[in-house]
Length: 423
Image (cartoon, rainbow, N blue to C red; front, side, top):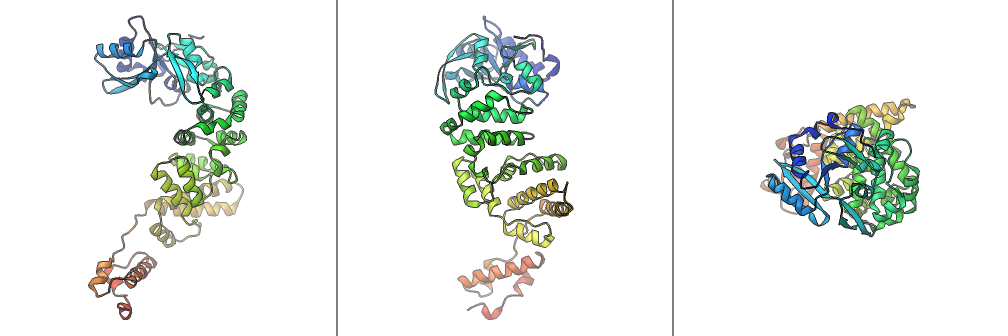
């Protein structure tokens, strides 16, 4: 255990009066509370801290009582597992009683409350996630997490296979945390154990699998993690659509994001490693139980026509009008990123990249116009309801698109073939 590192001077969040008030409220009656997990890890790594979670030796009912006595609002969000959310002047903090595992089944654990900090640390997944910060900012490390923080090593606590057998979701978390915080090659024991036990992933819910994949794809550069997932056979198991398509496009896409200031987009990154096959994308969305919006975007991208770099502005606008703007943007960005990546060694690719840059600018600023003619317009002119009316509308719409969307309602109605109006 090391108590030589202090985060007080490194973390503004730690100095928050709300957190300090919570320390004061819970560090009494013989109990103690410490910050644990991501907030400590991210502070030491110099990355953003979003949530502050705490661990305590108090039983959940005592956490509730002490919070109320201090004037805070305790919410029993997971009290059967020892978790109470304490709201301090509008800011929520998850406070969880120290635990030890009594029984595990590969996903869920039966736990008992405990007061042993070392046992609580040893039941967690990775060393860098098992660091505690006391009220004075001192870091407590029972499992070697500080050393792994320094070397950006993602390591299971104790025996990797044992940790995975307790919860197979940890395989995906291993690669996800490696994507965010690891360097070089994944730690050997963790990689081998993940490869050996990957079939256990089939026990997981589709929602949890997709949640982990999406978080991994949000990492600054997930390419190395995806490569090692493929090497371990994990990627093929959870994302079989990527097997024959490959993950090479990720490199160019990540580079384009950095160079061009594109926002990290997990769906676009996913599209970069799966085939544009609408049927398979529909099946993928259903299998992973994606949201309706995510599934619709994937399928629209797969159905969209490929965008060629020599397209005229008018041809692109016609494509945008007839299809999904998001799908066209996705197609252009992926093609642009690939061309930029190839342009290092190819003048032809450089020309393609220039074409896609031009088209991307047009697509981003384009606002889809509204067709100015309606069925009511034709009915008022004497066109009878039926197939002929629909065909006339479509023909006029084509004329309008071909005009560059410039013809107005009057000009379009003047082009009606009066002889065919009542055929």
